[in-house]
Amino acid sequence: MTHDAETEARKDFCAEMTSKAIEERGTGTTPSTMIFKETLLAGVVEVHLDPRSDERGFFARSWCEKEFALHGLNPRLAQCNVAFNARKGTLRGIHYQDEPYPEAKLVRCTQGAIYDVAVDLRPQSATFKRWVAAVLSAENRHMLYIPEGCAHGLLTLTDNTEVFYQMSEFYHPELARGVRFDDPAFQIDWPEKIEVISERDRTCPDFEG
Image (cartoon, rainbow, N blue to C red):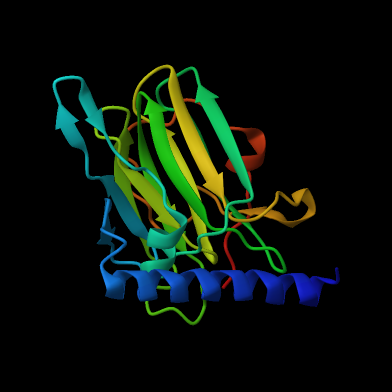
């Protein structure tokens, strides 16, 4: 399949899922089972569980193709990744995947806690170069959805932190890009001292845009 055909196939899939979700919502067959909270950046969304509790504990849905499409989020799932971080103060990012295969990602913290950051790199966006952050933890079970065109970074708030990512696109190492955590173009306010960072992330050039 050519790149253009593959791109159109992805768009058709997302459009089809959105249409189905809207149709089923209209018939009352798709009750909301997650809570979607918009942020200051268009398309960056906090996703919270809506647990059903009983004497055993609780049960909650953490992802649904139809619900994501219904809220205008990319429902495609291509890969899942896990990142373990041994030390508090570990910074990963700020990363994104460039055209022609940009990726959306859904991030959650399954052990420990992180300060999770999304940066808007969409030139036509009203919030271009602005950022938002959310504390994700194993305790609060919140998630952050970062759409295509936005970069993502995180800072661990505890030792032994594990992060789980759901990605809408396959990894293309030749398209991996990054912006620096302390770039003056963004002025990100990190809540803790950065203790561990890769050389690659530390030396990203200044953002030009």
